[in-house]
Image (cartoon, rainbow, N blue to C red; front, side):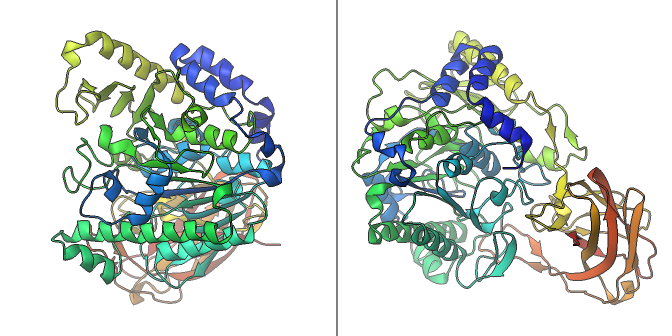
Length: 625
């Protein structure tokens, strides 16, 4: 809330959104922005003028659960009785689209904007960080008197103010980064500190969400539950896994279906909590997934769609979306009009009686007319998809991303899907050919021309603001201790990530030359003295290595006095995806004075008594009184 840019955007409201739409991408885009930015009052919401009379919102999103990973969608090999029942009790969006990867979907869902506008364009190296001046659903509802909680996978920036606590959530419990290596008795983050837990991660997250609901039963609440399952690693209890192995499924599919069945049970626990507290009729429940099913094409049931996670074809971004509100939203209604993640912020705001929320310019539209069955004149829309190309981006070493690739990308209307995977446009009639069997681009050149021009205009607009790897903020009173992790480092020479791509929890290895360095870009918001620590692993021969941390003209040196030589071990999983994990020791190097503003902080080795210097997981900076 302290971000001055965010305060300015809130005061400007939606007028800026409409003006920008007029000048940027033409009438087809203007319609979408206007509908989302100036929502009409929904039927029967006059009673929501008082905060204590507004409906609660429970938003559940799973990770890598495809459209076909539900029995309700025709998958005879999986059991999802709770989600099947929720679907039957809900209005269902049959053509609901998200992004092909997790971070982009989360950014769009929470902000109501295409992810490229938010800065969160990849999945690691800081490029998964949503800019702090983005206004989230949580901030919109918090201003309207809601208690707000996030329980699960954030993946939009692990450092304050990009952290959930800085983006409108009163409480956070879960994993701030993109994935977790251990699902049994995991260490999780509760607000600003790590805590130990007992149990399976999805159960533990549900426990926390239920505690939040019970604590706020007497005031409107927004409970966001972004489960991290069934994302890898494929860790699940034997009783789930064995059930699907006994059905003849391979290890990978059996594990995924077991993880989904566990999710199903936990959604049941959330719904039961609402029933027990008498809140079911006062709570709007949303359920969706963040992208298509993960895995190679054809590896499991996908409802006949082409493409899976990472693809700009239908199967990469079409997901289930159920909305249940007993007595207000019709059970069993199927909405066939296309809709997307960018629509949830304006939809939720309108359902909760928050008129004209002060946000950044929205791309989404309110779906309330569709939910209320009064959309006879609903116009056709144009929804855009772009695959981030994370392999290219995580290898990018510059702080500013230049020439963000246009493709792979896609355009979706009610009838057409136009796709470009980097080698030319393909066109599919999604009404006559929902499985995308036949490319008819040559038969409809005018459609290709019209939709490809729309994509180019959209791309130019959403990439107008340069994409920059954010500096890590240091010194906030709300977050006095900051960890600078290896995935966000700049490094030289033979230093490399142990697991190649530098995903969350990876570390730096191969440091043998004292001329090589590891550095981070930081933004010091409060100058002063900071305690400096390093998280390391090294053999006995490296004891005595002196490390030096420099920032501007200031520096601090300290020695590694204790060996910590454990061998990296394979992360447990029921798939063939290999990843190593490691434990680290902590050495305190001393204190350093940091000036206010952006600067580079660099880790160097002064000497090297052994064959290697050390492996590095992170350095820590703790502001001293």
